[in-house]
Amino acid sequence: MDLFRALTVEAALAELRRHFQALLETEKVDLRQALGRVLARDCFAPEDVPGFDRSTMDGFAVRARDTFGASEGLPAYLEVTGDVLMGEAPSREIGAAEAFRVPTGGMLPAGADAVVMLEYTEPLDDRTIGVVRPVAPGENVIRRGDDLRRDEQLFEAGHRLRPQDVGLLAAAGIGEVEVYRRLRVGIITTGDEIVPVKAKPGPGQVRDVNSYTAQGQVVECGGEPVLFGVVPDEFESLAAVLRRALAETDLVVISGGSSVGARDITARVIDSLGEPGVLFHGLAVRPGKPTIGAVVGGKLVFGLPGHPVSAMVVFRLLVAPLLDPRAGRSAIRARIRRSLRSQVGKEDYVRVRLVWENGELYAEPVLGKSGLITTMARADGLARIPLDREGVAEGEPVEVILF
Image (cartoon, rainbow, N blue to C red; front, side, top):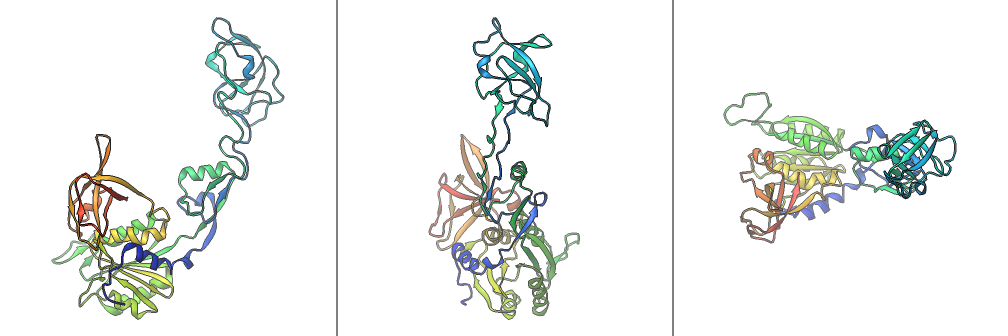
């Protein structure tokens, strides 16, 4: 391995995925535990939804043809011969010139094909109503199977379940689903200068930011973060913690210690713990060049830069697509609000804020150095400048990867 033989993001992901597939184990979970989980199998409706014709309004179930021509001056008179109760089937079929009282959601009697809203009727007596406005067949009615047809595909494997998706599965009577097991992601922060959040930093010290941002990103991707604390820049200490993290989790993210320097030991520690070790040390991106991708004992290990912005950007580009199948899809196009220069041979990822102006979406750069976490907090996404470009001109469309 050549130190700092920088790979493109695409090449790095391809290399990592070669070692990642074996981690995709599945399990069945109850629907109440399915929110945010990723489906491991295509999902199909086992039955029609709804399973019966139902009213969308309070009113009267009728045969539509019995109301044709009705008006306020010449109502259509119908005999009220039944009541539909919620949760029960009507007692009999509707006949000619008849009407059944029906609540919203109630089941239509056989023979009825429409519902007249209550406000378009007038009572003549306890048994007769006048309909003052005609209805068409299917009006104010949801037909059996309008929502779902039996054997209709609901979701493809790889779909992450949202609240509305869980609701759809519940409506279809699906009480459990097969999903990918949540990956346990070990998070290690390195650096003699790192102090806890509640501590007052002394000269040369900074508060721990990366463990918090990495934890949040893992949760966003549907993983289970496991924190292993802050480790000093010392070979044996890091080796001991990394060894434990590899034993207890599915993959490990280390922030700090990935650049070249006398005390940057992450790559050496990784190589000491097993084959094949470091796969690449260097990513053709900015920010985030000093990134490590490795495999130890069949498990992925990522060495992220120590600067919070660089660490978050690299996580979004390399780790998130492996944890979350949606991560590579959440990109849009917007026009850049100012000209930006870039270095050929590196993909630039610029923090941007999205704004609408004159009916068009613009990406406004949030400029700042990679150590400034405020630039991430104020941004909506990352504008990508391809590695074969020297920059982009103001007004030019760019790809924006959304946070």
